[in-house]
Image (cartoon, rainbow, N blue to C red; front, side):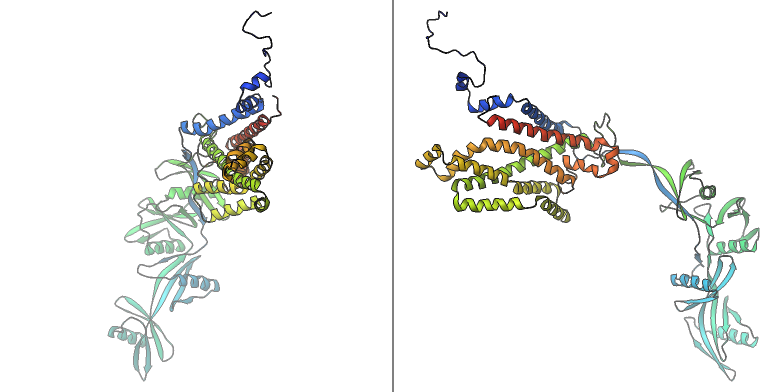
Length: 580
């Protein structure tokens, strides 16, 4: 028995540690009771730990990361690029004499004339003559009218027909040629042709202005001169079967290659040019292809090889790829180039690799978490403000005010949310709205569409609370209406609001992720977990680069799960019937 004289006989000493113990309840505030209930819920605590980890990862992690959100990493890589094209030429190549012109219309009329077997054609009011010098080798002459001559009783009358002035020398040359029954005469080095047509004759100037051939000339040096006269002399010698030809005081020898696919033009013992049917041209301007390279291409085509070796511009041997596209060939060379370090696997530099734009995935996930969490909280705040205002006013006043506001709630609920999001997203895409403004617009749209649930909950709670004694007391003491609603009614709804808001955060994050996945939410260069997961639209990325989308999906799963755990824990903690 206790001998303490200060203790009274009826004093009660509690030894129980139960939360509902009478003495402990007396010393715990309502907030402490809620906290005790919450922290005794293991799932709620786990959810809270998850959310704290997500906030630290997103906000603190982005601050300590050595990279920024849109930093692009590049690397030097060797890629195959188109270097040259090759094809066996089946079209005529037109070469004009110095100072002469052969229009595009003349080239078209030439094709028609040769197909029909004609020896002349007209183009741009000029008559052209044709002479076939060999297989697929034609000389093209022009015939320009100089004058029309009418002869009556031995007297000739000259009428100028072109731009050439009819001089006395031309008249004398014409009369002498007619007297000698000749068809041509020469004056000052120019040959004139007489075309007889009864009493009226035509004086014309005829000369070779171009030739057409399917042979391709390739020079051994970039500065080699291969003009009209040189090519004509070489072609004439090849068609005549000559072993050499003279041009500009120099002798050029002609030799046929072993494969008999081309003819080499040799000057002073060195190959000066080649003539063949293979046209090899560079893809880039200003690039000169050597004869050895063209010969290597021709040999690779003949051998049907996919690769070949040739000397490049730097004088070094290089391996080239040869690809066939229909009747054309593409030569590709391997070039060192700087490219984005896309889809790089996890490494010491990039713990989760890089994405399709060459950006660090871990950093993008950190910044993406900021935007996803920010959108969730902003949307819930907007929904809460609108829902509390509409629900509080509707529940307190009732009557026609309640009827009107609830019909507004019904209308908003009936709005098809997803089609609305898609339409607004398409409009913003059309007007190319700034990506940051899109984030604010997304928050506003989600908040405006999602408030009816909170409004209905607040209305229902206030309808119950407004009839209780403390509200009768506020009315009796003359407290103004706004103070009654926002000072006495709304605070009593806060616990339910916290639960709804906490569980609604997960839904908002999922909705944002869905919209960003569909391409109508957060736009590049800003990251969100939703638009990061958007990479799975590509099946190749889905199956080969797991580190691009699995981490973002896992973070969405954890965050939503955390909010749901916390929401369930708060709901149980605020329930006065809960004992533990």
